[in-house]
Image (cartoon, rainbow, N blue to C red):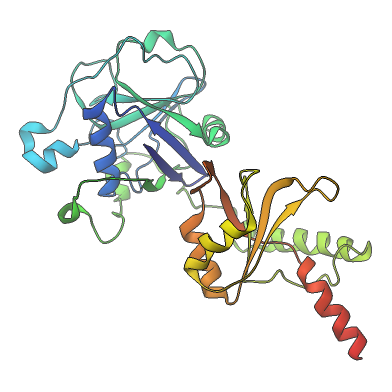
Length: 330
């Protein structure tokens, strides 16, 4: 079973060791289910060692397990599930942190950490290892490079925005809030001020620099004949799908994406000599709304045992025929 953690930088995918650590995995899954981790900050970054999160106060000394919500305050913490075969041998190991971030036994609640390098043998046998990162190592590297103070707290907050689980057979409907909790900055900050996770320099916030750079690139592409017009924008009803299984066919894409609206074309890009798939495709919908719904629903899902990525297409290739027709009519 897997969980996708959406951070303010990029996404991380965690595969859980549900057979070895059922109590810990249940706790993690249920806290994800009730949006407990939403807007939590990564409050401690120890460069080339670990990053820690899961405390709604951002202090590193709080947090509750799902068992407190289900059974009362006496069940706030739960016991370790330490196995000799589950070690901190590789970067991206996910393990529980105790209430205070130390090696106290059997005080697991909501906080967890992720390792930032291989062979952290000193942590073996001290904490419950319950998962591993399978995608998002670039995100871990970016968090590792964050500027921090002498306590390891980032000067600019890095937050968990959302958590998504693939499958959960049990129900916690009464505990699931309608929206993500809004963390009170005063609860997170004592005597200093941090930049919020969405802060950007003023010119970047307004998009001036990006717009100028994008327009300059478009003018160059127009001058060499790669695009018909520098002011032309990509169609809003076209999706770009990548990381496909080489065996996936257009018919399968039609079936999958037609759930969201009328698909006018599903084109897998292939080698012009061998016909082999290049593992990416373009899906065109009849309307923009269907395209948007498909994007938000299918990104990072599995097709033919491959986790695909979906984004809005930036290509204007399909606009060339329209431009040629307009020129001919003139």
